Image (tube, rainbow, N blue to C red):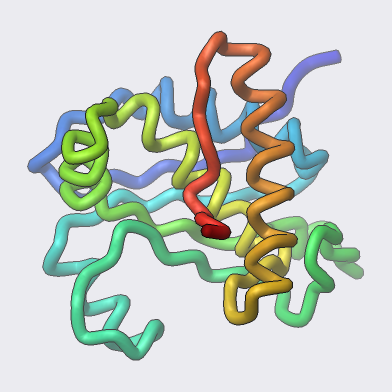
Amino acid sequence: NKLAMPVFVRNIQNRISLNIHWLRHVSGYLLNVIGATKFDVSLVCVDRRKMHYLNKKYGRVDQPTDVLSFAYHENVPAGHLPLPDHSDDYNLGDIILCLPIISEDATKDGTTLQKRLPVIITHGFCHLLGYTHDSHDNLKQMYQREKSILKVYNNSFGTKLHPLTDIH
């Protein structure tokens, strides 16, 4: 059973070095864990300035952030995959990664970019699957989903990664 890797990576920042092959592999693995290998997803790596612009325009927050997710399908119930009518619509959406912020946060937490990115991407995938953290109940639901995905990842890669979503 061949693992499909419908992950497109675009790196439009040059401050943080990135192994795009590794990022595509990890993201493809995580897509497999959530059962979404029939779907395409795009990862776009940006700098602070671009992320600030995107967060101000779409997130309505006038500062940069570590990750933004833009779901291709709207109103998907949390935890469900979209049910596209056409083959062209097998797309989960886009995850925008601000590598300078993710790298700084990893350093502050005493970890590495390679250990932080799977956590951030898992968080982004959960948003693409309809999870939100706009209420405590939704936050708990998202935390549990991130935890279950990362448990599978940790068992395969020998890591001890924890969800980005914090319920405390």
